[in-house]
Length: 148
Image (cartoon, rainbow, N blue to C red; front, side, top):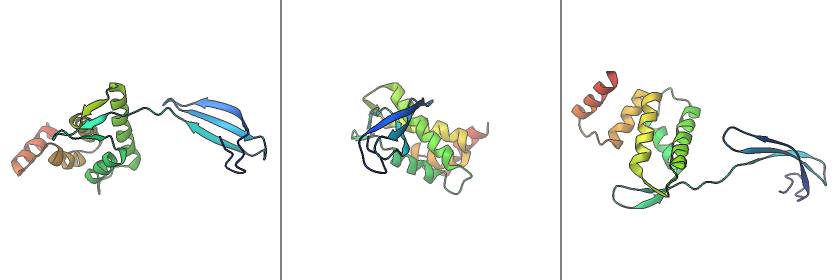
């Protein structure tokens, strides 16, 4: 660990704290310059490869998922924190599954359930693409299911 102030590699830990998500927060003091700073540590867990409908495999991309959810939530009263929370929930559920590969449908199912609770208009926007609602009748049927 290098001091962000003097770039020395000599520091000592003053305090350690664990957060609810399994991360570690450490307060450090540089042995050379005496300045204090905080470091955060978290375990790096590998997310599964996603198997697309056409058989391709690609890495799980948090930014791509977040962009898709943001598009569905555009101009809706949905806080950025709620979108980040939903993306985090998707990641957590994928990690809990513990698989090295999973269908992209699993991710879509998790997102669509989360959007249904978060914002119904965003849910419909996402469902039009994800569920392939290709005509007004199928969109209306989905809206009717929401209203029940």
